[in-house]
Length: 127
Image 1 (cartoon, rainbow, N blue to C red):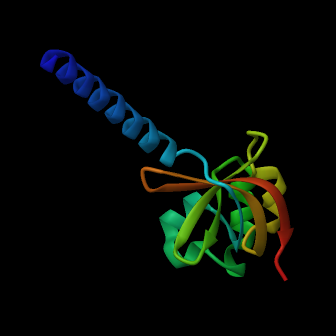
Image 2 (cartoon, rainbow, N blue to C red):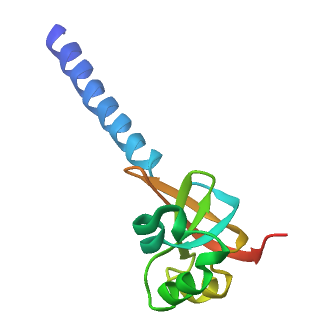
């Protein structure tokens, strides 16, 4: 009887550990829809030029970089959200004319390994 009981506890521990592992995997999967307001930035210039890669003074360069296919993001406070469209297409086309402007976007926010992304379902110029 003790051997059967011990095997039962062992199986419960393995199943429980599997549940915790699976839960941790799901914890870093896509989150719910959120609304964010921030500046449309081209990631290359933002990372390469710091504050000079932001704002209206950088708008024409940002448009050129975004139009050429470089990554685009929404900067909300101190956080940068890489941008894609919810249909798994690039966000460059919908965001290029809004470069260096404040926008409000809605979509599914995801985070993994310190990186943030928003899969956009709606975009509009912020007021």
